[in-house]
Length: 239
Image (cartoon, rainbow, N blue to C red; front, side, top):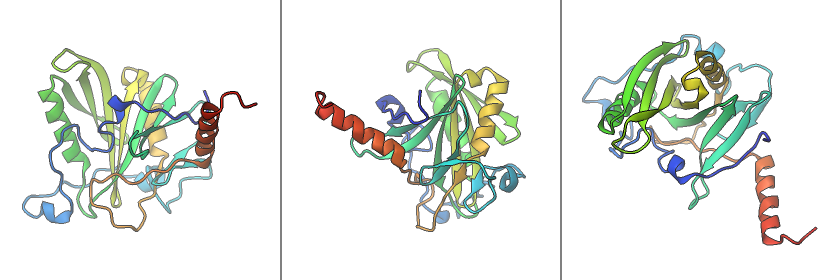
């Protein structure tokens, strides 16, 4: 498999641009927190030195794949896939495959002073509980993660393991959703966490409401592959 691999799966991207699984209205700005104590930002104490990085911070000299709001560190054995909406062709998430595991990564706009990760965990746990799943917080070097057992079929037994990661950065929130072997293999989970921490978030100066997805873009190399594939489908007999 090449480094770039575009795929679309409706069941996976249906709510890929949402922070939680339900459709409850979300606060649009800092004013929403006036009547209640806002959650503090949650991030590793060494975030600025060890990531996830804000644009402009020193992330090292390695190669990165530029996806707009995200810059993903390139490494041997890593495959990158983009999740897109069929109707809009909008890129809504990036999936990173490494040694039998996957981490789906997205960046969202966030308030300047309040954190999102604590509230997102509460909402995820509540929604999963309503669907017959379970959720348990656990600690890693990156901070608090949420380990869940998700029903494969609504109302069925919880069978699919998923680990949610989150970091509150400067005016952004980075979420990772881990599936595959890393959910049962601690060493592989730590490997994905290390990859997650190597990501650079490019928030930009454009006003974006808190909790809205930061825009992702397709690398030119992948766009060229799509164009070539479309041309071949349109004219399969061409040499």
